[in-house]
Image (cartoon, rainbow, N blue to C red; front, top):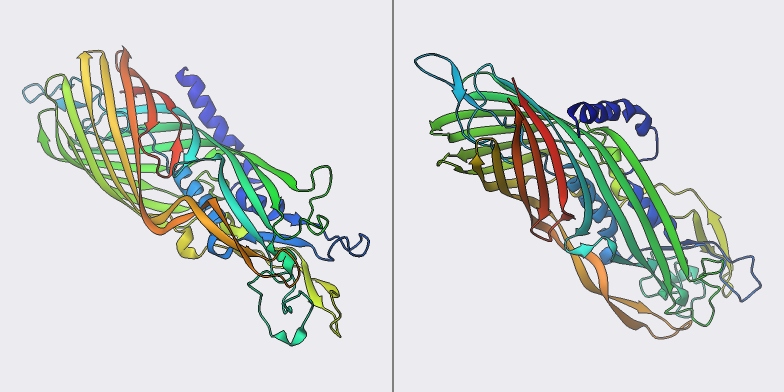
Length: 499
């Protein structure tokens, strides 16, 4: 891809930002699916005895309530912080002491997804562009295509019940927890199918303020594509004998498939960088790096996190002939949180209330618009701090070629871990019947509400000197762990030019 073409994509992305921002938010795409996929219309108009005069709403079980919304929050956070290429210039220079003429300070072109201790050289400037297409297929080891299954319980439609499900206004207040009336024992199984893709064009610039100090900037333009469906299946634990009580209607009354999709393009979170080489050695030494990620991306449309992040890192690199190892270790402090919409759900508007006097099975329906509520607290929405580490090497088989390899580690601190667990629910097979337990061993849920999640990626690539100080960079990123949001093998291609 030519440099002019790639730059054109980036400029077009910036122009399209205002138009994209007017469309529906991507951050609440999954909550919309949860809210919309399991509402069943009232059957009050059907013949007496064929159904119940209530609009059924199914919600995640109490112990599983946060899971779908927390999953959405984790995807949003990790999507916007996926690694970008390094701003470290492929050509680095030092001044020849006798003549003052700049000369190459390394025989290789440096790493692609790490920093080396060498600075570009006083008064030197480099610029570059990267393009990467990322598709994500798993989260915490579970396939996003049909892997996450949520079990949703009937909301407490009719509080204050006798054991047989008849109204009892004197029974006190508060929801029942034991499937009264009996039809509340039904469940809905939601199966999520989610496709997540991003295309990022990142523009880089790096300038040498002095012999030992560089400053740089990375400006990403991002396109995010989400395509999700939720297959909802009624599990008739209680109403198998009367399938009109809960029904989606139509030709498949027990199953409903809901779709949500969207695509947004715009400016991502801009990254400012600085590097100070405080201990120079042959072809490297030690340096301190400071990255400041600004919340310039629209967090409501997954183009950014909404948080300001500062990363301080110790950088080591050294040239040993054609072989040059490097190591980065740092900590990222995050200040800010995701939009509340990632965890917001909507209940229905129908509130059944027993009639006066209490007649068996008689209810009146009270309609009142209910305020959307968040399933996540402000602490749940906080973008997590990170421990960062990268180790790798550069091999220079010839003066015009460098082969790179890196292992990128991210430890997300005090965040949630997910997995497949066993869930148990109680139901009554008939009005007044005994409560019967039912287990499901494939529920997707939070397994640790305060975990350190270790994400490990590998990078392999080559840098080719096309002409003078123009480099072609080609890399692939691949997952080395199942933790967090896992990408498929990701191609990255770019150009790097030094002045």
